[in-house]
Image (cartoon, rainbow over all chains, first blue to last red; front, side, top):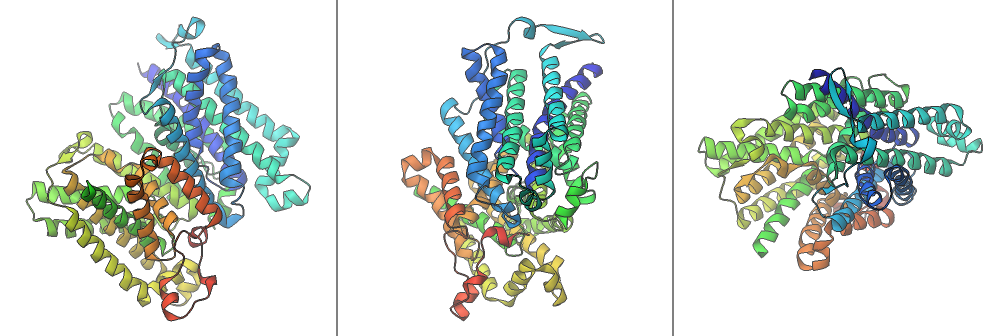
Length: 293
Length: 285
């Protein structure tokens, strides 16, 4: 039973990590909070609703990445491009909040405020495997696999590819990067595309796991990923991933010990404590220290 | 019906002012939902469980909330910009979850039994709070707040206690939000912790952004426009979040200072230098 809870927590943690990595990528490169991100996560579930009704399952993952990426580009264009410069952080955050409100409202107009059930999974995905005497749905393997694949891919992309090097250069200093001939706008678009694609993918996985897409997870699950990002340290990809897994397992343990109703409190209280006493996050990335000045 | 709408307009004006008061010291707070809940529940407990009369209960709730806000704010207000946004959002969640788990005040299922506020009480509250804010806008204290907001290092070199001013701003805002919470609770007769969720806090901040942050009438205008207009235009009430979001976006793009931009003191003393006017982004550190 405890093993089961821990594995479930680990899988939730993987999804937290996927969302938090997207958040932290935007913060790390642009120093700005993207409040549309939770709503892109929410919309990923509804992409699943559409595509599962007309196409086989694997296409849903492709569709989520494509739609999420497109939403990222749109968000960048509407809420961030006009608000550049270091003093526009708050403005951009407010503008992206406004975009988030619009996205949520449109989804609720189209699908209503109730959760929408996804078509049931079939074949291998509907079966279960057993680990240490506990049965788990095969979907959990898919979730862990996709998350590890995407996070690993992102790591390799940032560390090894030319575009990844450009992204890191802009994160260091967008002015110097542009002097070196890097197209900062293109890099910004790439960052939004990647981060929102990750969020939509996480939203799809979340909807598959719960069996329904709901329009209010943006403000619950999505904002929790925000807290996790802050716990990991703003702009710290590794911190976001580790923080996500830690919080996922911690929540599962709290449910196991009958404190489930306090689980939400843990995340936010942990975030407040981390921001007060260790604002650079659990790994103490240097990027954040400059920001706080 | 019209009295309902006016009542909620009054509540929203009070909430918008509570954000504004914290904002004149340069700190943007997304914790108004939480402090409103604290005020609402403390007054509810005092009147229902201890049988206090309503007015003392309201004052006590405002004081309690201001003290709680000062305790929460003392460490939090050292943070800037996005960090403060995150922490105040966190406070909103924490307060809600805490209230949901305290059985004494009903937990998730809510707390009821308050009664006795109506349109006239909210009008009185708006007038009282409004006059205090007007007095503040014309008083030397406003200048100290301006100094703290514009440059806290210079302000402290001038002998202004920056921390004290910031905590005062945050606490005063919390007290105003608490009054709004008290009135709301006593009007609805029954509240749940989920009535004060994070969306409320976000909306209230956006009212202020819409109306303008340079004077107290901006917050008032933002709250009135966004509460009353949807009641009279059907399309607006159906598409409220979308229309609201779009107007915020358009405003931030083309009129970043909000609808009302004049500044009270400058307007009174001389035809002032426009350089003193600043959009929200420059006012938050």
